[in-house]
Amino acid sequence: GQQVMQIPQYQHVQEGEDFTTYCNSSTTLSNIQWYKQRPGGHPVFLIQLVKSGEVKKQKRLTFQFGEAKKNSSLHITATQTTDVGTYFCAGGSTLGRLYFGRGTQLTVWP
Amino acid sequence: DGGITQSPKYLFRKEGQNVTLSCEQNLNHDAMYWYRQDPGQGLRLIYYSQIVNDFQKGDIAEGYSVSREKKESFPLTVTSAQKNPTAFYLCASSITSRNTDTQYFGPGTRLTVL
Image 1 (spheres, chains in turn brown, orange):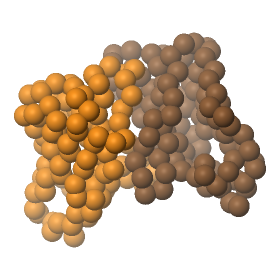
Image 2 (cartoon, one colour):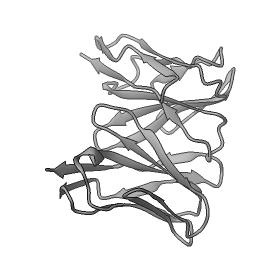
Image 3 (cartoon, one colour):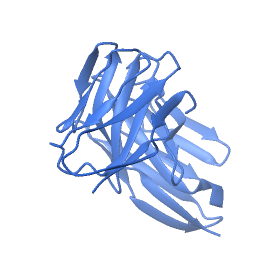
Image 4 (tube, one colour):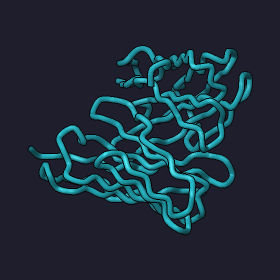
């Protein structure tokens, strides 16, 4: 069935370093959403990308949607301790459902 | 986020007992979802409902049951048939079931079966 693969599963960085998480699908996606879950919390919506090749920025976060609409990435520049958490991508199937990746757990050392 | 409540936050049950987790939303959303979260497994869809009195199985529905008698409520019952019920359960809702709609999550219920 439809799957959205996300890597890496874990990432440990020193504060100030950059961080990137990647999502890949074997089939074309209609859209991709990104969520953040703080430790002990629940997922919170960050952004949605719909167009092929789309790039969106939120302060230090840059989100990309691939030209073929099969992959996406989230890049954080100069991480801060407030960036700690698990980042999930969720790909929209052309059949209608949203499929979540397994998430990337980010740890930031001060 | 705000507008979806799940209770209780922590729940303990003995093996062999059914348990019902509550989920209520006041966002007037048509669609509601139940996910299970285990370490390293991400979010796995158990059941979802696009409209009142209708629901569909997700990827891991075995051992679970739901009802959607009211728009605001989507309770999940974890039955004794669920082989490994200890997990973090998240309820979510969205305006409709279109995959372009943002999903809003409740705070979750952490279930431990002893």
